[in-house]
Length: 62
Image (cartoon, helix red, strand yellow):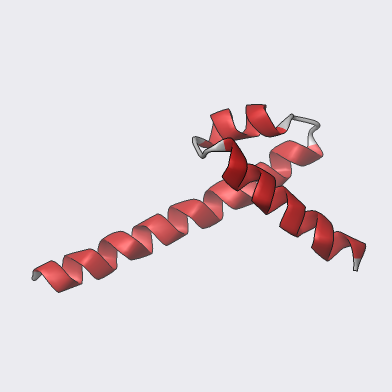
């Protein structure tokens, strides 16, 4: 596989992993976990988890 194809494949995998982490973060929030606990569980930085949860809250308020 050429370098370009590998780059596209790797980016696709990363996007998929982040979508799964975001979905898992929502489920963990529903179970009452703190932002820091969620970040640790999904192995993403706390600021990113805070952004995800804020986005979700904005959608739920509408």
